[in-house]
Length: 66
Image (cartoon, rainbow, N blue to C red; front, side, top):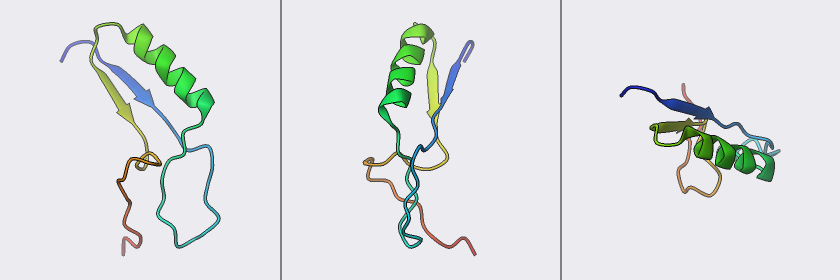
């Protein structure tokens, strides 16, 4: 792919309910960071990653791996 920009985002808030699905809450500060990083990437491809689905995306993590 040639030059690539990798951007990692992390949750800034955890739910207190142990039975809830885990989602990444991205606050305004991280959104501003993301906007700056995307602008700095220019024409390079960008890959954005998180350790769980972003809150509000509709994607869910299944509880209980084993």
